[in-house]
Image 1 (cartoon, one colour):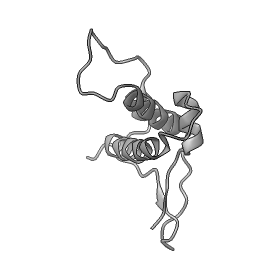
Image 2 (cartoon, one colour):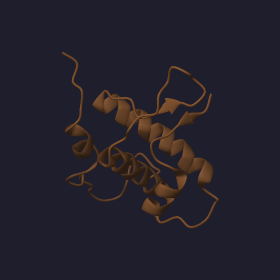
Image 3 (cartoon, helix red, strand yellow):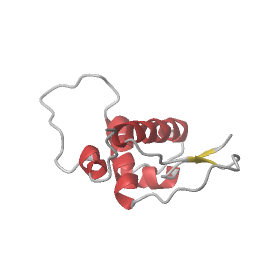
Length: 106
């Protein structure tokens, strides 16, 4: 069952400034994981199964696509659980992009 992701490998490679194919499998797995993270955070559906007749294509907002791309780029650049130095979250990051459309269960 092919899941249609909201961002493409080429979009993510542009975000990550990757011009080679060596890490395509890794980036593809990050796309899926970032999409699942975004869906869980915002309680929204961002992908669909192209083989499922009941599944319909989803109109994905640019902010959602950008949030997923930011998460993929972060994971691609920071592959370890820890880093040297002090890190802080970048303002207007992935969570901020998803927050406006977040469906909060009541």
